[in-house]
Amino acid sequence: MEYKKYMKHTSNPRTTRLIARCTILFLFLCAASYAYASPAQEMDALLATSEVNYGQAARILLILTDNAPQSINEDAAFVEVKTKEWLPSKTQINDSVTMGNVSMLVMHAFDMKGGFMQRLFPGPRYSFREMSRNGLLPSPSDPSHKISGADLLNILDKVSVYTGREL
Amino acid sequence: MKNMKRAIVFALFAFSCTGLFALDFGAALAGHAEYSNYTKGKYAINLLPWLSWVNKEGSIDVYVSANLGVTYSDSRKLHKWKFIPDLKRTQITFSPTGKIDLEAGRLRFADNAGLAASGLFDGLRASFIVGPTRLKAAAFYTGLLNAESASITLSKSDSKEYADEDNYFAPRRIMAVLTMELPSFPTERSSLSIEGVGQFDLRKKVSKDRLNSEYVMVNFSIAPISGLNLKTSFGAGFVQYEGDNHIGFAATLGGNWAVPGRLRDELFLTGRWSSGAINDTIGSYLPVTIHGQGKIFNPNLSALMAINGGYSILPIKNLLLKAEGNVFFRTDTTTFREAELDRDSKSRFLGGEFFVSLMWAPLSDIMANVGGGMFFPGGAFKNTAKNHWLITGTLIVSF
Image 1 (cartoon, each protein chain N blue to C red):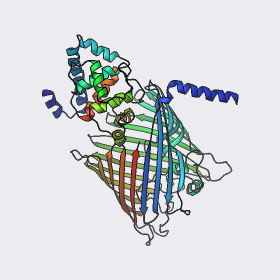
Image 2 (image 1 turned 120 degrees about the vertical axis):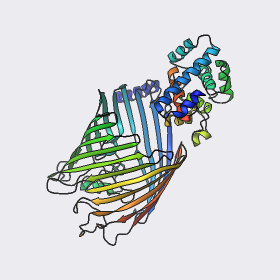
Image 3 (image 1 turned 180 degrees about the horizontal axis):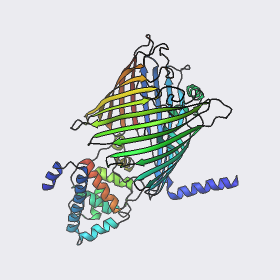
């Protein structure tokens, strides 16, 4: 509650971004501490991950957007997002996340509507276009690029600022 | 020949190995219609396909785009649709480090002062960051550009070719550019750039209609307070044409102010001045590409002073309302040309215009724009010159 109050009174975008970033990290640590024995280790592992898999991405997204309890594991999170059709049907839990697919996942998780084509064909192609157009992805990037743990946290940070949704 | 074939096959193989098949692509479809009491109807439908590819490291960026458009104009002698294919921004960018960018292809270029050249040009450009300075060097060729898109009308031959509807290519010229930018000079909220542009006519030496010109420009921008941006620039252009050498000057001063508050509105005001013919040494300023200064009456920034001011507001999300006005003066009474000018008039006042437009983007990939306005001729025009009105409409869908 105190955090929300402070966010409303701050108008400096840099401060807002910093707070959002810290909040994401803090919440992730909290979530990780609930599910895993060593949250610091998991955080370090994520930041050191050069290619995040769909299980990891699904779990983080669902927890941070209040779509799942913090106790959810990667397998259950992946099943959840596949059931909701937030990812293309061909994706496998251990596959490396691509920039196109993470765009699709993030847009669904944050309930971002996107453009006409995105509504008509809600796949990775137009999700990537929408996210890229709004400067929410690292630049330059390509839909086929694999993303790292640091990339994922950076994207979530930008999206939380863009949508104004407190994480 | 055999070696060439091998090279092409190898290049295709190398590209497929790097993952070029994973490229992103799309297109925009744009429809434009305008009607005025002078030129009557003009209509255009353009398909703008594009594709892009970035390597995994982000050090190589490839972008290809084109315009496949058909246009129709009531003012043309032949009343039929005209197909104009045009290669748009197409380039490969190589960034080996964060401080070096090397670009090749059809590149977008505009000088920082906005006084010499702008548009797409074929060539090479290198940018280096050295300490607090960004240095850029570029070399361009104009002979493969579309004449209408390039808008190069420096000499009489250029103007003739530009007006010829059967002529596709722009005049053959080479252009060299050197730029030095100081992004935080002398304070964090200001920047300075110094730029040199030289363009050289590649017409045969026997042709008397060869025009070379070189430009030196200084541009200074400052944001003294949040939301207020001020910009001033000054340029000198040296022209060599038919044995006549002269120098012309141009300057701009202006700014925009994002009014604090919830309305997201902005005020803007800019004055642009270019010298006219004064004596044998100081002549009319001549930019490389046409720098149109108006919405309805659209004179080039040559022997002209133009003041542009206006206001824009976002009354509701995704809807931008913009109202602006322009006032024009000629800076000499001999070199400024316009069809309906009164040759005996000594008046420098060319007239004024207003234009109001409404841009609506209900979704991120759909945009509609409608506008309308009127130009009122001033004392430099013949008494018979009528007020000139224009209405326009544009719809763009990206997919």
